[in-house]
Image 1 (cartoon, rainbow, N blue to C red):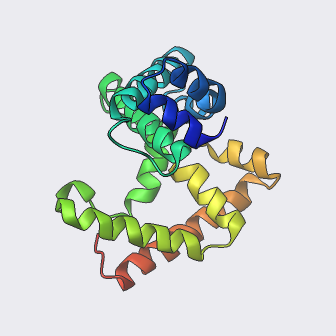
Image 2: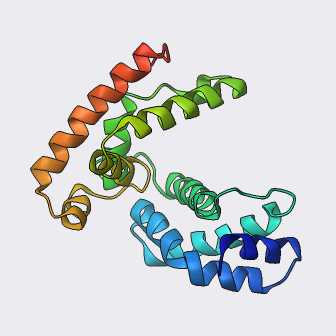
Amino acid sequence: MEDSKIIDLYFERSQSAIKETHEKYGHYCHTIAYNVLYSYEDAEECVNDTYLRAWKSIPPHRPSRLSAFLGKITRNLALDRYDSRTAKKRECPLELALEEISECVPDVSAERESDGGVLRDAINSFLASLPRRTRIIFMQRYWYLSSISEISASLGISESNVKVILMRTRKKFKEFLEKEEIFI
């Protein structure tokens, strides 16, 4: 079913909106949550919470891209669940990925609400400037929080190649943000 039809079901308050969302995006949302939590049960709970949040948000909100809307909700719920269940544990895949990118990204919690759009636009501009494969690797690592080995296997390249691409892309990203005067 097309996304616009699914969104219309939410606006009609039809229970089939959840069913259709699950059929089309259940696996996608579960993968995002699982990559953060590494727990099937916790990932399932996040996916179910995602459907509830979508139900509460649509209407009045009409997302332009349902997949991105659901992915963002799922990711945020999974990160919240991760924070609540860990007490400063280090060296897990999530901590490693966040530590890698933290050198590049400014502390958005310190930014004013209005400046958030500037950072979002800068990130989108940077991503658009990357070659397709590099963009995929960067997004898989830092948005979907996939491991180096998962990225390597999905693209059929060596883990060391993935690491080098990520290192170079982080360096370019930091330089890009500095050039845009978005300071760390």
